[in-house]
Length: 347
Image 1 (tube, rainbow, N blue to C red):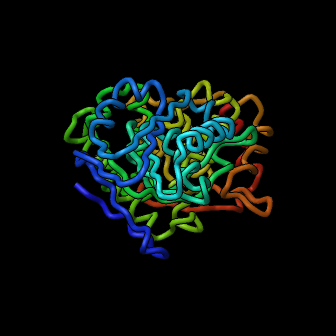
Image 2 (image 1 turned 135 degrees about the vertical axis):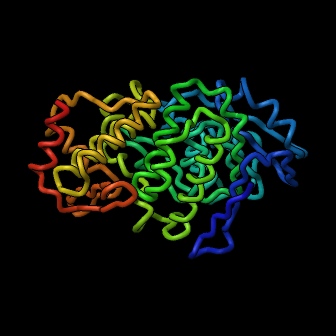
């Protein structure tokens, strides 16, 4: 199964997402796989055996969001230089969203840009992070504030890789699937309410629908100047949660789950969503054991962190909100007192 990512402004960088079609990869240049010990234990040897290349290297970095920083980028770059990679070399990201984001970022800056391939091994990465060319790392000020747009050469999603995921990691990926349905596709949301994503057939359908949704959005707005920002539904709140907890308490998808609930509470207060619709979203998240609550220590401090969000500008916070189920609205004029009242409900 193949999905085209057609970039409206730069057709020469179009690429494909392949679902369960990875049989071999052939290159006529140096290749380096970037991965972590957890993923390597399950998938590295299999992937290495699928790659036909004269010179193959493996760069292993520590596992975890807390290592998604400039120190790790410096390490990967150092390994690239040690292995004498050049402008024709190719990096392969073998792992989840953290590995994909960092590998893509290194590819975008190594010798002013080289090609890279995504082989995502988590559900979250397959349905969202690996597609669209967002790369980057976190800083002490917030998530993904340092990075670039750098599209991959190809994305290979193998559903068999998901069999090794811990249940919590699997559920975190479901949050991103639900996110897309709530903001873009009511029929998809209704289908999710009636399916079982722990069933292989239903899961594959959900992955396909999610990637098609993201492909459509990215093709319209590669650099997030408009509609692509809607894919950050729930993320404005989630990124503050992750930063406050130093990326040690919640997986990204778990923080997004809470963020969607918070965003929906704001939609309720603004009259964009009914209470029944908000309950339906919350119930679907709970079905997959995703968290829906977070104890905010200070509503004022939480609010101030919003200004570090990449969508915000001119000292205005931009919120991506669900307008009923299947629709969206972006607002940068929400009165502070209304936002604070939502945050106080979580104190």
